[in-house]
Length: 376
Ligand code: GDP
Image (cartoon, rainbow, N blue to C red; front, side):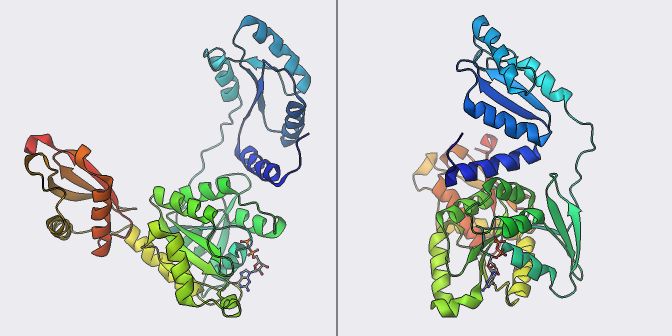
């Protein structure tokens, strides 16, 4: 048995989520060690899921080990398939077995909505309550629709003239209700919700602002080029805690320096204040995210930024920027045509990004540098 530590509890939580999502479970054991008590525990847990299990005896690097793999029969998890990942032996058998369990169910169709929004945050910050507050907003019509995985549920909210799909609201409700008080920030679940979202609200508790975990999640949101809103909830408690808005802004900005352009919204899911503003902000961020910039304006801004701060003054071998074009939205993505992309220092790229943001060309910009040698 594993010790019932907090860490193990958390790991188990993540495993449960992964198992729930899976169509087929590959259960890997180690041929060189044989059946361990931990294998028996895992086998027991897996049998309860009633999902197809493919038992893989890994590290079966030679005939003797491959023969020994038979001992894993006793796990009651099916016929062990000897595999040597190292020597690439048995992998075809493994995959054939995995594929044979695939259902031919129709693929999941991503629901349509104007904006796909994820609410992300540690337990107890008020995600569940915020969800209800949003659902209770003026003229919101809410319908539940199945999400991508068997235990997930999205909520589609129709406001006057736009629709918002709140992603994985089942996860939010479940965490809020059952796992309250336990530090079980389902990172896996959060990451999946962010992947599907256009915009993520990273929700925090005013009485306990930003943790390191929040910073990681914020970076994940930005690395995926999603829109981000920093939400400070439970703002009704700020007065009591002696926290002013200016202080809160300063703390949040300090913690999320890499997202200096992210709007900060103050909400109280409890009394409903700030909810309408949060939704308006989400709409604005979405407009930024899907913005198309007229080419002449883009060129003018970029060229003046370049003139103000040239990439390098070292003459013939310096970086030259010939032209710029927007090639996508959601997020706005810009291609720069340059003489040599290897000469673009990340700090210069950062400078250009910031210049575009400062000029309100695009809040969330994605820059690509393409070399075009023939213009040299
Ligand atoms: P979740 O785990 O992030 O979904 O958090 P919950 O929505 O379950 O809220 C956790 C606790 O914080 C509950 O006791 C809520 O009543 C409380 N709570 C949530 N939002 C607010 C808020 O805006 N103000 C106050 N004072 N309490 C809140």
